[in-house]
Length: 154
Image (tube, rainbow, N blue to C red; front, side, top):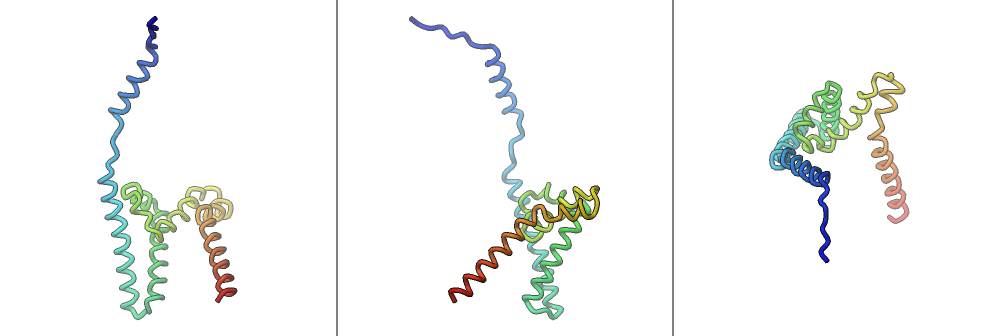
């Protein structure tokens, strides 16, 4: 005996609705996103190289010029985050804006700026290290372990 299945009108409506949503959903522009991430990340790197060359031309050795370059890039990223400009760059550039040194500065300053209404200590001070804190702790503990292992096995 053949069994007759009733089709549920609600199920049909759900399927039609899902098809309509899929047809109207904006498609990700992967090529455009990759292009702008590459361009902006490259521009940040070029800016870093320009600062490095500038500091070296002023007589700093490479290691000191590198430290000055890192400090300058962190300062600029923190300043631009505080002014709200870095968020616009990140919205446009996507992953290109998280070049390690500037992305780290942004990740430290952004939570602090978000909670500045709670005051300098409980707002900015407490939130400044929400993202950076675990990174710093991991780096310090790892460096300590490597130093102890180096001391024991050298």
